[in-house]
Amino acid sequence: MARSTTGRSRFKIQRSLGIELPGLGKAGALERRPYGPGQHGNKRKKISDFAVRMKEKQKLRYHYGIREGQLVNYVKKAKKDKSRAWMETLLITLERRLANVVFRLNWAPSMPAANQMVSHGLVLVNGKKINVAGYTIAKGDTVSLTERGFASLNYTQAQATPRLPSIPACYTIEGKTAKVLDMPLPSDIPFEYEGQLVTEYYWKVK
Image 1 (cartoon, helix red, strand yellow):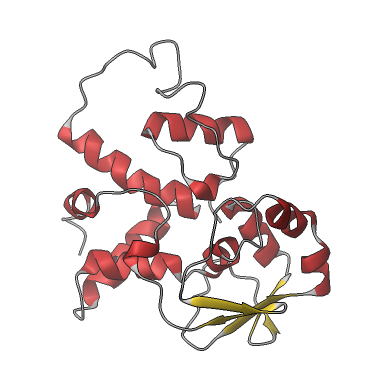
Image 2 (image 1 turned 180 degrees about the vertical axis):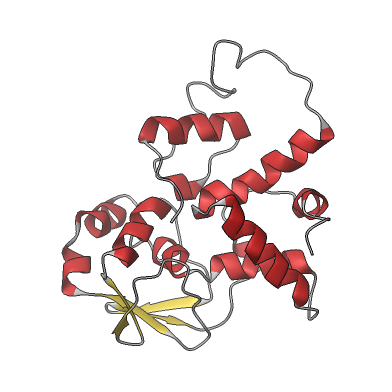
């Protein structure tokens, strides 16, 4: 699991990237200070092409709550899939992570909270407990929570104030069970990103 971040550092991360990332939880990181953190955060800085590309891939890292090594492994696997552009495969794979599915179903208020619910054994896939946040869901899978999961503070908080206004069309919820109708799409990513910059950042990865 990626290193946890405090509420304060999550705001700093989003300010430094210049974008709100839903996976980091509570909205409003850019409302009061729409510039980078620190004493000189509101001054214009010349940013190198490398830094621009790195910031773009950092959006994926922080939103999905994964380490750099994990992201690189996802990139390597995506490049081996020749059925589509590897960037598309990467984004679809990230969206298929179980922790992300829990978050996108509005069952957790943030990605760290979704990771916690999975690791604590509160999430069921096809009726079986799965405690691996990076478990990959497939078309036709059903996802639900245990009784403890539905009674958890994370779930009740997410239901009271959903971080995202709707769930992707690839999921449907009936009662307390969600079903994966189809694979998620790159367009389901809930924030703006430049895929070409990520492609350029990882061009050396094989």
